Length: 312
Image 1 (cartoon, rainbow, N blue to C red):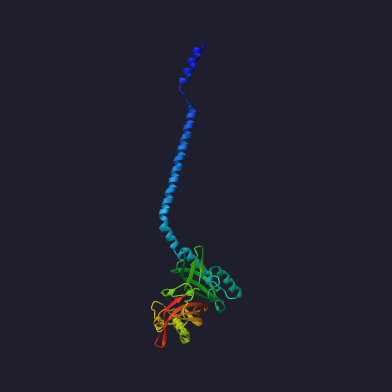
Image 2: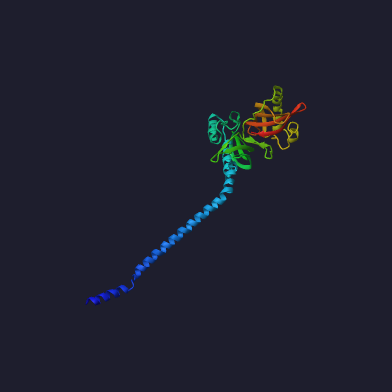
């Protein structure tokens, strides 16, 4: 073959279009498809995440505020905590070993430094007690992260061959730090329809003490008041209590003695703020318990009366 023929053949070969074998074309097509698919998937996910972030940013203000402002001491977990406390509180047996046992069971629930028996005088017990059940009556907020849980508690008293079924309504002050709960004061026996203020324990009012004469007269008046408050009818109670919202206990407890009293000059003229600790005896179980009160007292003529009452 001459040089001219070779040159023409080479030129003809160059003019022929290059063709990719069919299997290679399919392979390249698949690669392109998956690249495009992954790119679209990535774009979609990115858009979704961005969208959710935008929604969260829009909702963050009001929703976060609601969460932060919600009183954790009123949540269902707080109710369950209080019921568990009531279970341990209304379960006891007489004897030194049993006192220590009850103290150990109550310890996880109580504020550090509080009465380890939560106000119950274990030395005065005449019966053993077994918790049956508790139901919530109402929850009353007392602060941003505190509340009083009012529970109706059923428990059974036993000794030898005797037995009694008892129902008690108590107010339990609790508080939360957002992580857990604590009982901040002794449980108090209340009437179901008691509309008196029931507040968590707080520091005593820092004001001037009353003069000696007023303090002595009020100390003499307190046993009379508490005997009426615990056992008198609502009509009889009106002689020493001028507040229709506060209901007497009508025999649920019996007054034993005043253990401590501090009397301060009240914020209103002629009134006194009285911080007192009273020992009461349960009418059914005969067990003794310590209860704290803040009373607003004033003198009408020659007689003292109570115009307000707060359970601490």
